[in-house]
Length: 292
Ligand code: ATP
Image (cartoon, rainbow, N blue to C red; front, side, top):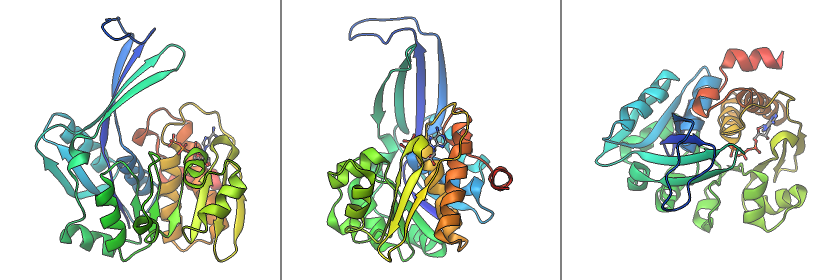
């Protein structure tokens, strides 16, 4: 079982020919509410990729989006016994997409911003899991507290890019940035150089490179290049979350690195063939079929 301590957001997406300027009103084309948030996306990815399940630890508001976010996790088979409901709004991402595909986004942390460090009950769930997945959409103090209290391997997706305190890095087993986040952390734009710099901070690192795949390294001396699985990309939203969730599952099953990374790249490729975030995560049967 994989535990995830992270964010849940409702994405409110307005599609419009042109985004309005300040003070302007425009008539849009369509509207969609899409459950997201990096924590919830990774929980759904891990639950769908695994036979052993995933537990989500986080918070939603007591607004109309809270039950919808809970249901989207439950529908994917995620254990939500540690999901709390707090007064006020759920995490919201207000997204405007114009006809050129350009977007502007307002993220309101809402309930995510109220999460403090893990409770004793949360720590029981984490201790029973094979790994803890963290991202940076919760308050940094809460993320640091969870990483430091965890007695299982900690996998960090350092997104959105933020300054990483040493006390967090000290508690991380594996870091999984995309190439922009890796460059922001290390100051190196070359993925090979960034990988070596990351390994000075944490024992293992994967840098995801979109359609160019990923690179992996460990302090133990392993270096791997992981090709992307060619697919017709429809929506790459949450490809990184699909990759991280599936990678955690494969490692929990004790698969060696080349096999675990191939499993993750296959899950991520399948997720980009479908629109949406949580809704695009492939099932274990789909991943196994694609691997065959
Ligand atoms: P997001 O922020 O949308 O979650 P990301 O920037 O964190 O994504 P990427 O590096 O874009 O993550 O992608 C993660 C992984 O997904 C890649 O390493 C690759 O294996 C897979 N992937 C991404 N885009 C494609 C694609 N077009 N075709 C096949 N695989 C892809």
